[in-house]
Image 1 (cartoon, each protein chain N blue to C red):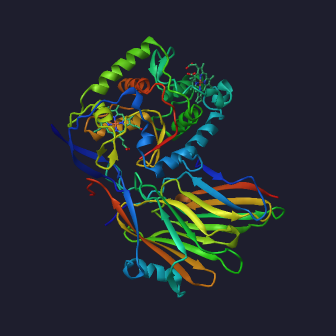
Image 2: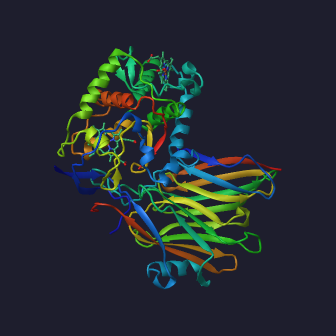
Image 3: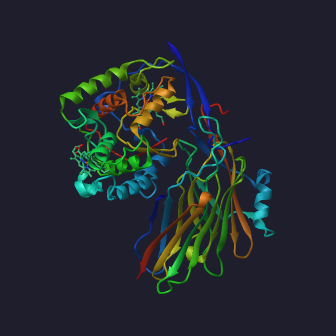
Length: 257
Length: 148
Length: 114
């Protein structure tokens, strides 16, 4: 029987060890540039981009009182428009968390400490909604990780992880996202792996998802055990990716295949 | 050096869609009875309907389609319905639309799921009962992808 | 709660043909997919959509159908529909989606025709 959107599909493919030059800073390209015009059109038009449904949800949650303190995000932060530039800085060091955290972890920190509400679980629709609503306010801003020594340490750990060969295929993130970028891997074109569009609406997921979900997908794809959501190893990778893409424009909410 | 990768993916496919018009004679015998049932006795002819599909898509989960019908959309002369059928999904119906002259233009656009090469037909029903069709063949090529 | 995004111009000239876009949040679960544990995911679809036009001053009227649709599993998740309206008089556009498991969502948009 034919089915659309079937459960598991195994893509088996042989890939040659291409040798090509690493991505130079000047040739950095967003994943957007590797997509077909139909997918690009979806991202470019807010009246068609399904991620705008999550944004609308997040904007409503921003104004809702919650938790033991019965405060809304807006009660402390004012209009969500005032978060302009915030999403372009994350991950960053947080004195409250005593470590480097990403934007969704900062949001949950406000939930637990300032609202005294329960933290939203990873990939929860409300969390993704609020994160996307904050990210959209920084659209067009250059990624600008702050100069913090703790953040530099995280970026270094992330860079080492980016170069480590993983999985049964023994490929590093850099092998795929620099040497093989622009080549086809089965049906997919391998992008340079920049985090500029997150959270994204992924056609594959048929929903909005986080950068950590994307990274875990890459790990699973090469048959490597993915780190759990929220793991410091994932935040380190996110910190490195943001630094590698520093100066590129945030384009959230992106649409990806 | 040669490396081998086994890419396990949930539902993914990169669909390269190529659209070809289909002559009435070669319309799939799955589609013809569906069109006739929708026409409910009205005459069925080719023409007046235009089916637009993006020629290349990254993922078959979301394929933009647009159907336009040549009609003035006046009280006297208008499209009352548009139906869209596919040949090979478990269910052949995709959508049926009811239109009124208020629409001003006989046009609908949506996004559909396509995971397999097959024929698609758009049928427009006019207020005089006549039906018009446009059948296209959609070739979905999925590189190195084995479906269970 | 589900969300919807409607795109319609707020004002229009009489006789002008407008484009309307409607996007609604819904997984459109086909009933043919399996979870990672191998269980069939139950079908959960939006089945019907309608857009009606209610002329100003006729508030108790249910209005006139601009377009109505019956949707099936082959419609992509978060259904998107675009269609047209010939602006004749000022009024309200009423959008309605209905589906499995009691799904129901309504939106209203006012239109001023000059």
